[in-house]
Image (cartoon, rainbow, N blue to C red; front, top):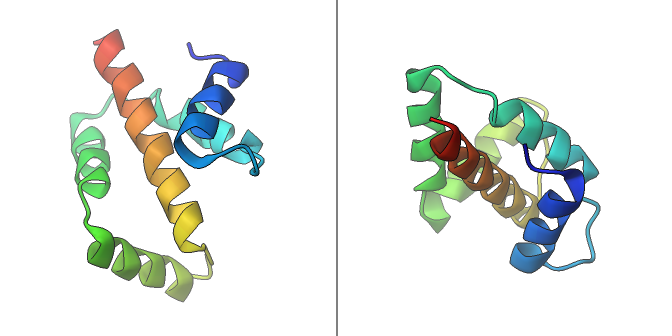
Length: 91
């Protein structure tokens, strides 16, 4: 399992060190435990979205009461990608 420090180092490399990645680490831990192949495919599909589709995704989240900045969506996608790497390594 990836430690919190390893995760923060990864996110800092991807997005800079001016963010608190603690909440994303909690998401990472949950995501990296997913075993269902359908859910894993959905996560892979999310990470393949282009800029326009990410904007639509952000609007969909906002319409459900979850407001995110474009940077936060990018950070979440990086979290998913890292979790998928861990899933692949463990399978």
